[in-house]
Length: 364
Image 1: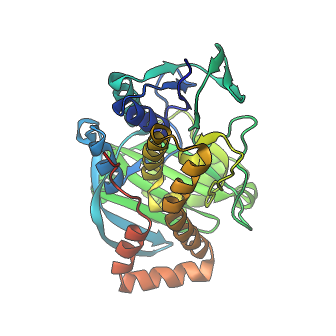
Image 2 (image 1 turned 180 degrees about the vertical axis):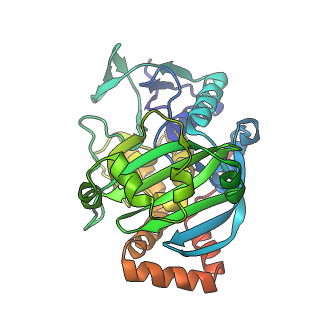
Image 3 (image 1 turned 120 degrees about the vertical axis):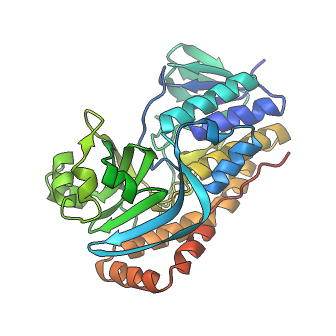
């Protein structure tokens, strides 16, 4: 007898497997890596995401990380700071992913690591270990598209961006300046997020437009030289890098929303369904939320089209609002005007944070 098969072991896929198992239907989850991996991610877990995981029985306090309740936004030498309307967490993705996969396996899901999916067929999945039958196919491969399953639509006029990520050893002054804080730095051609993921490790995750990257030499060293002029990034870039080379990904389609198609038989989760601009810090919350919604749709007998409609109804507003804010932030004059306005009205940042949040509890 075939069963639901989930492709991808990030938060979306792992939560879907966990939720299905908790509701009495064990799924098979296929993860291409045989061990936990670092991935390009801001590693910001919002209060809503923390609540979603708690409702599923996963307490993030048992995973190494730090609490965050403050945000800084900077552009050049202009800077504003305010309290967030919630307490979030910063957690290394490889540790979170491993914990969620273990939780899914302990709940009854079958998790197979080191299996690469090659193609989705109508009733089976072609993999590196042979064809696997599937009653339902849940695609949760993150920002990486599976061959034959491209994202069908992107926002009009959208220019995909290039993402980079590097960890740095935090000096005591740098760690003190980032205590309980996520720092967003806006610059010409992109933006960066900075936060502690442990008391002495900083995550720098940034994006740049392709044209900007090409103009500075197309390399990570060129990016570092360019960003060394940013006062709020210089202390990070001066610290000791911890990865032998930065992680990188091309063509990040911020603002993408998968459109429901009656002919589609694939349930699309996480970044395969919605890609929210990373500065708002709700990417993992969307992934977790989509895993719950997809699992409940499978249990309830809803097809992929009905599932995608349900998910789109909850993701459309936060993604579209965040995309408009990103467009403002990338225009030099609008960026400085907006930051000046936020400095005078810090409550606007808290309002924006609320408007880009996801529902925070799976139904029982």
